[in-house]
Figure 1 (cartoon, rainbow, N blue to C red):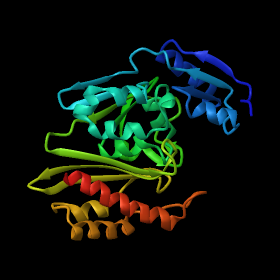
Figure 2 (figure 1 turned 90 degrees about the horizontal axis):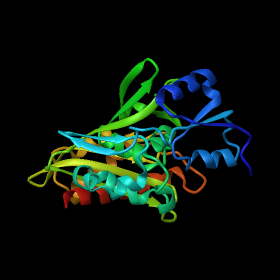
Figure 3 (figure 1 turned 180 degrees about the vertical axis):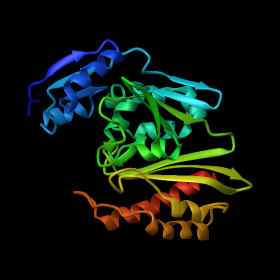
Length: 284
C-alpha cells in the first residue's frame, strides 16, 4: 500500500515545532526516525495531514553522564546506545536490551525517544526505563516538565504527553557499583516483537537481592512493574525456593492479554520462565 497524501516540513528549531503543532493540532505527526511511523503510514493506519521532521534538530541527541545521572537525547539512535561505552559502563541494562530491538538497519535509524513516545507495549525501551526509574523531560511552548517513566505509559500507544509537548531527553539515575541488571525476552524469531520480555535491576549484597525492579513487556497494554514479585524476593538469595515463591507471586502482578500468536496462559508461563532466568542472571 501507499501512504495517504500529507505535507512535510523539516523543522529548524523547537520553537518552529511548537508553532506547527499549535497550528495543526492532532492533524500533525512528529517524524523522529520513522521506523514505526512510516510503516503505519504505508498501511494507512495513520493519516496525518502534516509530518514535522525533527531529526535534524540540534541538542536532542547524544549521551552524557554527569555526576549520578545519565542523559540520553530523544533523537539518539538505538545503534548509538548499543555502541556506547558510557552506556555499557553506567547503564548495562540498556546495552543488554539494545541487540533485541528489531534488526541492525532499523537500529541505525530508529530513535530512543521515538520508541518511547510511540509506547508500543512490546518494545524494549519503555520497560527498561520503568525498571531504571527514568525521568522523561517533556518540552512545550510554555516550558518543560518531568514525568517518571512509571507514570508516562498510560495504555496501548497512550502516554502522558500533552498536546503540543515533545519528549526531548530522558534522565536516568546511574546505578551504583553494587547494582546488577539483566534483560531477557522471547520472540518467535530474532528481531521480531517480543512475546514476553523482562527488564530487571537489583542491588546485591552477600548474595541477597534488594531494591529489585522487574518491568515486563508484552504482557499488557503498557510496561508492568511486578511489585508483588519484587516484594517476594526482597532481601532473599536466589534459590529454588525463592524463585518458586517469586514466580508464584507473578499471578498477582500480571494479567497477560492474548495476541494473534500466544494465549494469555502461554504468556503467563513464559513470564515465569523469564523471571527465573532474570533472577539467575542477577545472582551471577
